[in-house]
Amino acid sequence: MGRYRPHIKVRRGKRHLQRHQRDSLTPAPLSIQSLTSQHYYYENLGLAPWHFHSWNRRQTPTLVRQLAVQHLLITFFAWQSQMVELPDPYFMAIRIVAPEFAHSSEVMIAIKNQLERYHTKYNAPDPTGPSLPEVYQKLAGAERLIWHTQPWHIYLDDYDYPDGWPAWALRLPHSSWPYEDGSEYLAVQTGWMWVGQLPTRATEQPTP
Image (cartoon, rainbow, N blue to C red; front, top):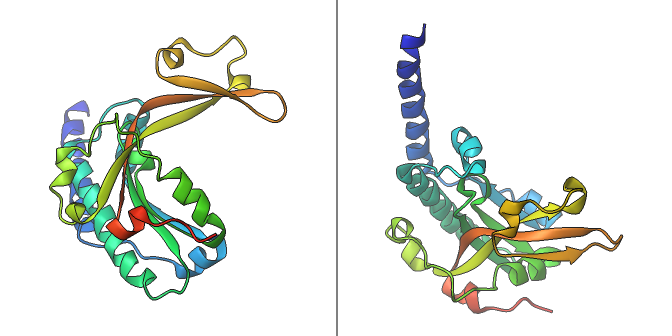
């Protein structure tokens, strides 16, 4: 039975790759109803076969990452053409996350109550960080956006670590912060993310 497993793996791999090739040419739909009710909306990557590997710091294959980011880019510009018809100011960006690419890379929109929060969170560039990787720079549409680099953090709660923070976390850039109840969480920088916006949106401030 084991001799058939490589063939099954190859067929599944080709099927997933073909799906990502189709997705790279097709924007995700924008739900205006969800956006207007929740004041934010986003499209994650559909990279289920690589989620587990991503959590274990195994990189998604380069071709798949390129196809996935191309899907985000084509979705971004499709949504942007719809947003210009709405009266509300909005924040819109793509984020590409290095360490947890399959889980956390997305295109996002925020309006109204969420506008200032998103603008503040995603407009804090770190000039010491690496620039957008070349594998993404050459994708169609990437050159139309302004990209800046920000640190990517994960957050650990002290109640999950009663014997103290794990050694791997303390070896990385980190800082501890208190909760209102006196407990703490640890913000650990595990890598970088790149945030892309249209030039006008990258310099706008949210309306008070």
